[in-house]
Image 1: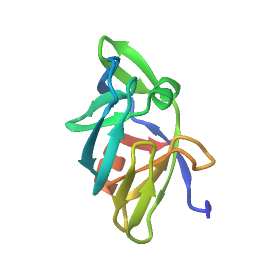
Image 2: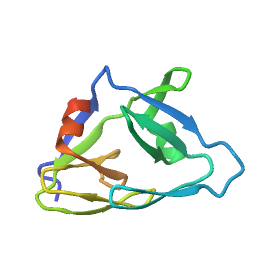
Image 3: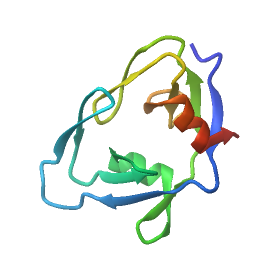
Image 4: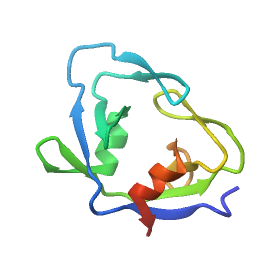
Length: 129
């Protein structure tokens, strides 16, 4: 159900620091968001205000733009809704745990490329579009 999903943009003062994992590697596995995540060769390792995680290469190319060496801003809008109850969300890297009141965020209007964020984190970084 998408009745309460709204469009948002990243605030203008929000940027990330990122490095592409452009090495011959099978990637690596890490534990985050309550579950095991996997990064592949070519994906991006991101520091988002101290929150470190990975982003799929194709998603990164589609949604970020470089503003300085190693610094990127999100250029695409997201669609988000507040979770009514706790649960799990599948992501490109694994799956993520969320609590009631957290935001379910999608890089596309169809809701196929999603992730979740705490209410405080989301509201600090995004504004209605």
